Length: 168
Image (cartoon, rainbow, N blue to C red; front, side):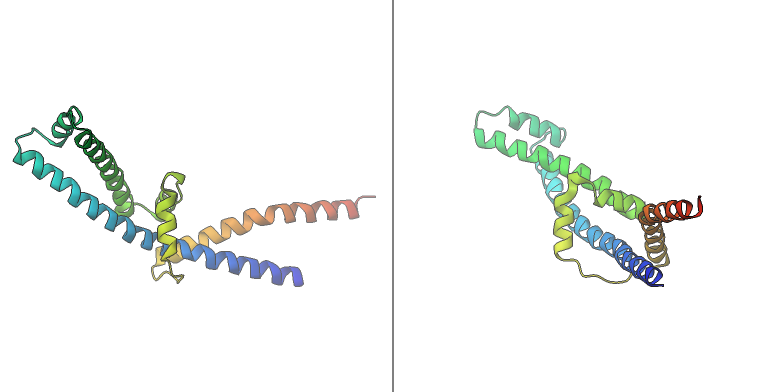
């Protein structure tokens, strides 16, 4: 009886934790969207500068700046290259969060490459309960899978003990 109560409490705890993932995904999407918009604004500025000074595109302007004699101009060109790479990565992330399912979003969030984004999101995260059926369904499904996987060793141990007691 106590074991069943503990089992239900553990499942309840796992469910509450799993229900936070959709909420965390929403917060993460807001963070990612803000970073994307800021980076997009920078990239648009690079494009306007390239157009104003008659470069074919931003890449041509950056290539020219990377060959400049002035170290600060070359360093600025490298920063622009990094910003363009970030913009490309953020574009892919925003697309995942706009069209992907919760499993794809969770995989994106928990990728070790973007762990610093997750830390920043978690620092402002407030726990809650998702208000969407997909969020609740995701939480319940994850809780059931984690609970079952966590229970397998105990189930096997109990079966082994039962076999040992019933065998002569």
